[in-house]
Length: 219
Image (cartoon, rainbow, N blue to C red; front, side, top):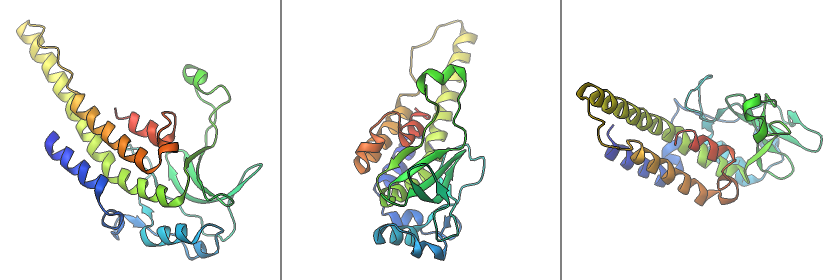
């Protein structure tokens, strides 16, 4: 789709009712019956039961968060000072709901990073609270599920336009106009970031947060 169509679709996804985005049998995974025994709020249980989480294939290049529900009543994740219920995956990151606080935490499978990025995480990659409540996590998951393909398509279109302009300039011998073909695409990313911040300012507003980094990965 062209940029105008993409912009309209992004606006629709950001403003749509959650039920319209999530309630499809082909892409929604509901939690197990054991959910009712989990020690999280009634509202969080209702949102998970009503909408589930997206079905995302392994190796998804769009960095989307997918359902990966544990089936037991007791927390399957345990750390030194907290326990939690496993509900999702994003690449090599496990998504866990803290049994005590109800916050949603990203637990990395690999904690060591390469030398080039070691200065950013001197203590290694740590667990990160990505949403304060399951309610907001489910909402952002579903919106990101539909937004990510659009952003990737717009990024790829901008890449191609830039490459074609360079090739045309090379053939003609002219330097060509100094045009940033990615401006409209970055504006879409900024619009998504602002909307997500409106739902979870404390978490998404941090440029080092998981949601912010995923959006930034497309900017």
